[in-house]
Image (cartoon, rainbow, N blue to C red):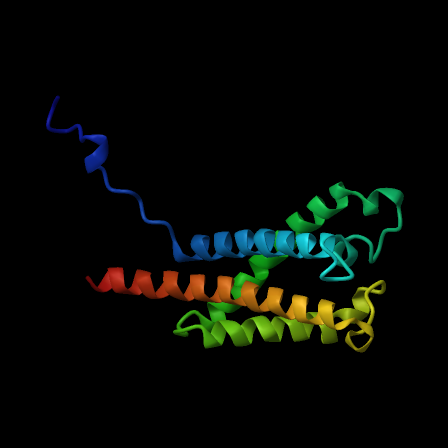
Length: 165
């Protein structure tokens, strides 16, 4: 073996950009937590599923009640979550600890259920939802915010630490 060739175990991995990690965190977070939301609807913890928000708000075809509509909705929420992750990155990436992420998740819940609710005509106002749905969705958004926020902050602070070494 020549000195120009390196063993596979001695090769250095190319660093991944922090923006790419942020986008991956957003997409995976959207897929993961909307899938758990779908599961919560299946077990009747909530009165609506991801497809209730994303697809059934505007389409009333028979297929929108199928598993295909749920999967399409989960993927769409994953794509929307790319934007949410970028918002967190540009505003709160330097934040340390869980509290900024918790507040971010609660703020997202408030935006979706109070500000954006008029664009989802088949979802009842918060005052008309049962307590199981309210508590479950708050918990889902809280965990989503923690997943997104803590992951992005950790990756950002870790990349800064590695640059200083």
